[in-house]
Length: 149
Image (cartoon, rainbow, N blue to C red; front, side, top):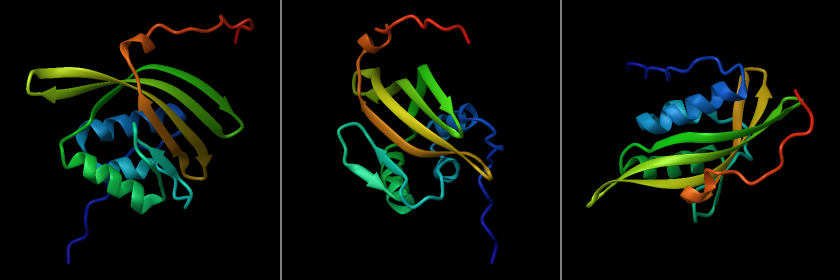
């Protein structure tokens, strides 16, 4: 019996590597590559806009399989804010999603939080929480950092 080919994933040596593979997998509709970004932990969780909390590998895979049944997800990170500390990283992302409608292509905006942990095999996604957003999310409201890095 032939074995299935493993997903073509690169070593995720940083949270940015993991995030790039996550969005690339969404854009290609590649469920195996997408799931390879996730941690093997039983408590990983995912919340899609206006959706319930989905916990565990099998449930998350089923949720993305259902989304991919409608086609690929052309989600692209437009703005990313990062906090990285001691083997964990939190990315606050403004996603631009291209969707095809009867009127032609339209843009939807999503605000997502992606949480990554450094593991023995590289950085892995442990939580993805997405909420509906709008074009007003692009300009940021906040303070200018007082410390130069």
